[in-house]
Image (cartoon, rainbow, N blue to C red; front, side, top):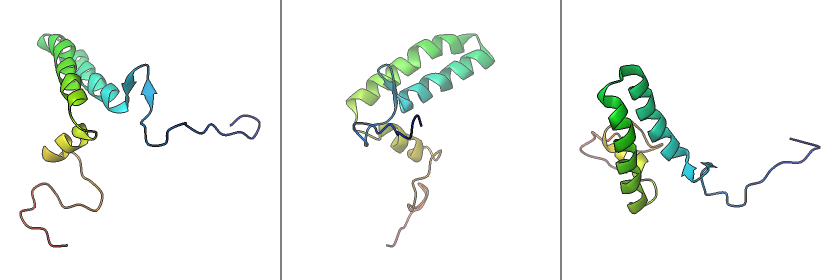
Length: 91
């Protein structure tokens, strides 16, 4: 806040971006970089190949693809929704 002014983004529904990558893209790249840094070896090759393939697939998929993929794997929970392992859900 500078001089009592706030920065209001032009489009409120768009995620934050760094260059041409949004926050999900940066998370994917950082995740594979972390694995490559910790374990080395083959993970450096995976760091170069897998994020490229995932981001290519993500660009062709609808918005929210990564969150739904993480939900399907049981790593992310949507608010006010049942777990992915629930067989029956009554509203």
